[in-house]
Amino acid sequence: MGSRFGRRLRLPTFRLPSPSTPGLRPASLRPPAFSGRLHDARTATVVGRWLGTAFAVCFLTGLVSHFLQQPPGWLADHLPARPVWGYRLTQGLHVAAGLAAIVLLLAKLWAVYPRLFVWPPVRSVRHGLERLSVAVLVASAVFQVFTGLLNIAEWYPWPFSFVPVHYAVAWIAAGSVLLHLAVKAPDIRAHWSRRSVGTLALPDEERDGPDRRALLLGVGAAVGAVTVTTVGQSFTPLASLDLLAPRHPGHGPQGLPVNRTAAAAGVTGSAVRDWHLEVLGPRPYRLSLAELGALPQAEARLPIACVEGWSVDARWSGVRIRDLLGRAGAVRGSGLRVVSLEVAGAYRVMEMGREYAEDPLTVLALRLNGEVLSMDHGYPARIIAPNRPGVLQTKWVTRLEVL
Ligand SMILES: Nc1nc2c(c(=O)[nH]1)N[C@H]1C(S)=C(S)[C@@H](COP(=O)(O)O)O[C@H]1N2
Ligand SMILES: [Mo]
Image (cartoon, rainbow, N blue to C red; front, side):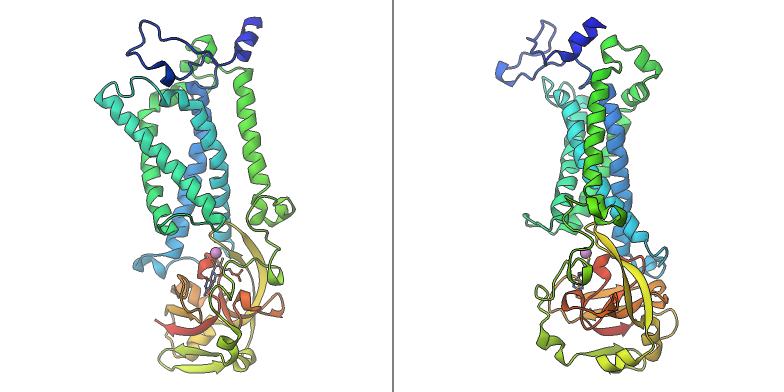
């Protein structure tokens, strides 16, 4: 025990290359050689398991978000409007898993970094390819968590458009994770469990010990701290602990956050003064705000669930979309295009498949939590639909077109 204790506390030792070390490397480039358990394959496997799980959650929920936002034609009419909180859950998980992945990725890189600097850098074609795949894996993983983090802070210090690039690199990351798992399968199998046959056969110093348990506990605590201080942005019961997330579910006009304000969207008081809703279909018509308000009003308790991870429930009331479409002579099962007053912007025009258009909870909302919508929440009228990304909950609606 005494000798183990001693080894555990030993600082990283700087070993001179032994005669068997292949190739001599300039001393200035020589990395430390570690003799503890923190940089071995078992640590890499345990942290890798958590990181892999977080990445898998990010990838799958990211796909859900992608297909809800940009469905291919054959899918658009089959996207489900239930459960109403579906997107709130998947996107909340996407951002929470992405934030946890930052901590896990740093821990994983720290655990394996001595291997990233092996000398000589390439020993054979096979070794070269393996290292190339690790380079792609590290670059794409770092890119995804970095761009994702900056996106939730709405900071875009890059020349490309976030959504398509984040989506494309997700496939590169997923491919390189699978390749990495295949290449490392023997190591992963050997170190999967503390009781793995492979592990028992390892030298004493590679087995689990208090140092590794302390490291893993620390990483787990850091993940827990990041999660608990941010997840309240979408998981309302923990809203009071939401100290680090960019958004707080209760902060904003009418108790609801705003991403794009009316001012930012160029929607001014004069633009909405003589507002009319135009509905285009077999029997087109126009309604003033007063006429719209005089139609039968429906109420829906639905969340705004932003792609950036924040989400919050609210009580919306207005006219059912299916009633407005029926009045225009739309046949059952028609889709819908929605156009905003906003002059320019990626979310000025939105299309909605039939499951949403027919849903009794899909409403052209005039009121939020009992009050007339504020300008920032889309006055005079905005879309609210169940199980939809926030970006598709179009504000300042001026025209509906039956498709
Ligand atoms: N016309 C228009 N509608 C829009 C947006 C926009 O930029 N333009 N932003 C969307 C986004 S990203 C979100 S999350 C929701 C937020 O709604 P809120 O501002 O009322 O909370 O509005 C959506 N509606
Ligand atoms: Mo959003």
